[in-house]
Length: 315
Image (cartoon, rainbow, N blue to C red; front, side, top):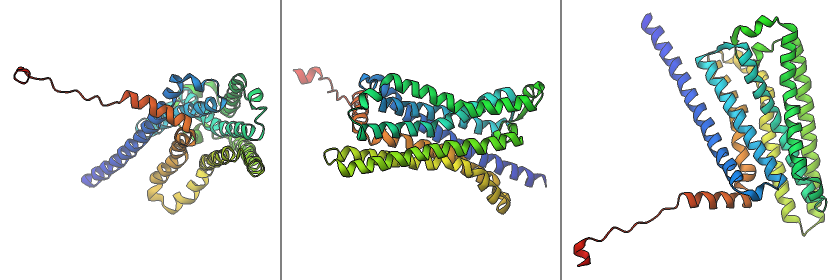
């Protein structure tokens, strides 16, 4: 009896350890790749005056923050699930803000591409560095609203002593009132509707411009491909809104595999979309790719050193 229990406990521990190793490996890989892009951006001042690359590097940094926080939360849920509610709320607000920032930044990048292709003469006046920074500030302001609203609702519905207790650090446990549920439905609908309208509008406009202007057809086609990639990444981000439904459907059907289902949904909605970010500009964009290749190839050049000649060889 005891040996069976110990064997089951060992199997569960082995599965948990494997999942954490996979999660940490993917998180470190994503942040390492994105860190390479951030380093390339910082080391090359030619990107500082281009709103396109400023928005892209903001998306990369946002993904790095989100990946770090979500991986940390996942590890906590496995090894130290019950933590201080105040600390948990801070982590949940950061995770919520960075999650909301992704579709908003994608919308801003799509608008910038639309202006560059369809309004090229007005692009330098509209898309300035100052306005890009203001846009990033607005994105963070709007992205923080849902998380701060959740905190306000908890403060209004729970005693202040609740924040000094310990609880399972998951949004569904901390934010579990009917007000949170209704707020989430409204926020998710508004955010996704706005971003999809922007992506569809900009793609259609760029498509029309590509057919009308043959001289700028190559640039228009590249912009179309970029906006389509934004749409693909957005669809992956939207999967996080249907994971509760998937959990309700799959867990009763496969109750013995509920932790595998939770883990798969976590990878699908939080990790995999972050892998697409480097592909949008870093790999496809010739200017950025050239700087990465030039910078890192100079860092890892193989230097051939000839062996020193002996005295006998000299003689």
